[in-house]
Image (tube, rainbow, N blue to C red; front, side):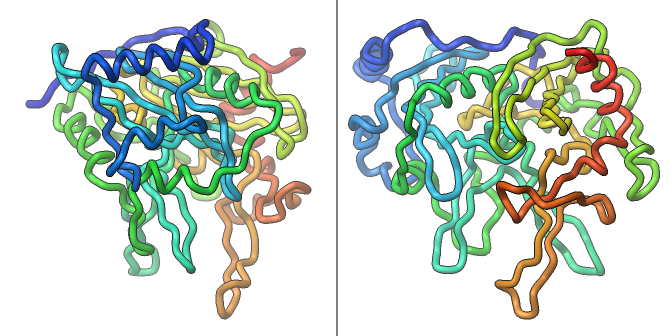
Length: 369
């Protein structure tokens, strides 16, 4: 049987109180002491190419014996991102290995770690973690399990803080290819460096949350009010609130509150978002302490996908297909008005506002705040 993974409940990390020069000097000292940079992208032939001025680490923090070094925020036509350096020791006394990664912000406002990427004349896509297979009309469909790429909730506030630091975010179309492994157009499945730590964690049944079964499901199809959460895994709105933080988003109409809440049994944690009008659950994670070299947890929390729909979600007519195809990730009949900022997305509040746990969050946490 493989290793057993511990759980731990900690406050959100804080960025080290050091200047960018001091952080860079600390990073250099680790390299001089034998740390090795392991790159998946085109910079693997010359990893120190990443340490040129634009990708040099400027900030740092630590979570569960994993070091995170961050360059300045960047953006390209698709994403806002950081070049991040994840430092881990394979064994307690072994040399430190440092893995350059791309940490990017999803439309749900959760920061994620990209698993790989696709770029060609026909595709431009960031890998969103592990995959699952489902059957629809006797057709086998492979789709991403996006939540497997969610970075720990304990570092989300630190990333938001760093994201707001620069007055102007530079455009960068080079970093993704330098850092990430490039995949062919047909491959949404990540490579072994992403999947293997997750496979090893699943080998021990003790590591599985709720024995690997979903902690939340809708009893009736297309009925948001029918949500049930397995006993013990409900958010503890009375005693489980361990963080409140503020941020803002033009897509969501201004100021937001982000609230991290533990489950009653303390085995999972939720990240709720509350905006001027929209409320949604951005992520649901275990409280386990093992992270992979991508900076993400190796243990999943299974939930119904329709519980984690963001306030605005894809809902549009794709006229690049012949004939055009309607694309929607909002349950049928529950899409609201299109976003004024992004016409490809629609208001998902007609669905979200009928989910009991979101209604309870509004009443017990947001009411009067």
